[in-house]
Image (cartoon, rainbow, N blue to C red; front, top):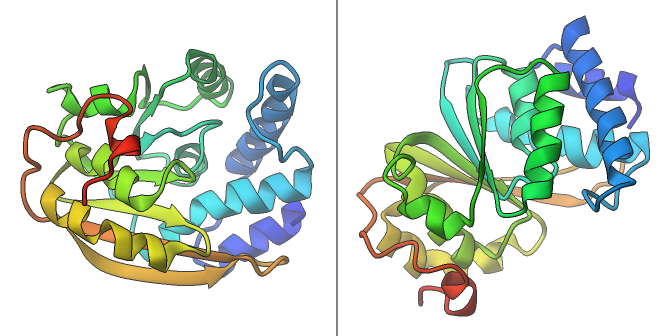
Length: 238
């Protein structure tokens, strides 16, 4: 996906980028490649693939909800900033909090935000399990999202405790999404979330399957969740 195709594909979804936003994506790509030579941020480094598999794919969450109204969003395990930084570029009024367990990645993201002149972006170096028990962040966000972090049964325990009652949890998944949803039903129920919407689509150019699940946070999450670091992964809620 070249830049022109990226612009056109987003335009078809009602997202029109201005010159400043296009420059930010260009700088993002440049910094991603530069930093990737020093540390492992991504295996995808050629421009067409980054624009498709990282930028466009991240923004796809916005195809199914209105992010133009100011909302607080938390990105759990953002890695190199996906999906929250592309979303922030497209929707500058978003108030973004990124949590990641690796301090090197947080260093990259801070440098990136400074270079792109992004405001209201906050970075926290923490394990998601500890972050979810911190009263400063617990049940404080309108939207919590994650992309390519863990199976849904595990991911739900890391993300749902951060969503305020009445907010939403967005899980961005690949082709095994339906199996994951089945496995996660008990966990989602225990944590206070119910499935609201399921969206399936294929990435342009390469036709790989993507699924986006949107969950409503209907009840307050029991205080015991998330459990201690490592436990959700070893023993998902059954």
